Image (cartoon, rainbow, N blue to C red; front, side, top):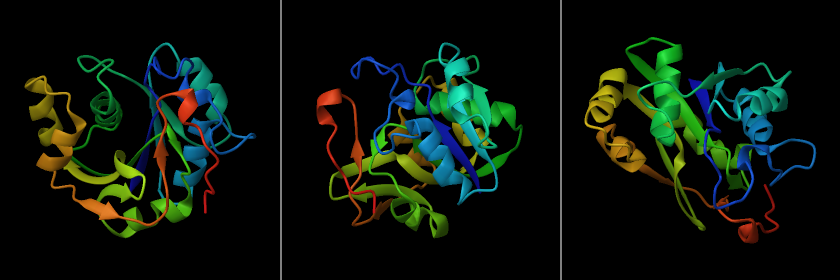
Length: 187
C-alpha cells in the first residue's frame, strides 16, 4: 500500500496554505505531519501539490523520505482527482492500493488511520464524513474514465471504485476556515 498526501489545494477560504499551517503540531506543518503518519503505515509516500506550492512543500517534507509530485495535465487544479492523476502519472501502473489523506484535517493520528490499514473505505467520525481520508483499491482505467468525462467529483470516484464508509470513534475535523480550529486530542 502506498500513501498519497493531498497538498495541492489553494486554501482560498483558509487564507493561507493549509498544507503549511500547523493544526496538530508546532514542530511539523500539516503536510509533514501527514507524511510522518503515513510513513508508519505505507511502503512509499507521495505528496501531491500544485506548481505554486511545490518548493515550499518540498522544503516542509525534506528528510521525511517522501516523493513530491505535481499536478499534471489534463488534470490541474481539480482537487483530489488531480492528486490521484499525478500519482498514476508518476507511477505508470494499471492498478493501485493507496491510502489517500488530505493535509487539512485536525486531529489526525495513527489511531484514526488504523482502520484503513486493514480495510478499504473512507472515514466517518463523530465530526462528519471524510472522503479525503480513505484507502482505495482502484484501477487506472476507472480514474481515466472519470477524467475523460471531465467529472471531478471525488465522492463519485469513491462510489465507482466501491469505497465504503468506515465508522470510527476518533474525532477528526476537516478545516476550511481559521475560525474552525479547535483543540482536539489527537489520541
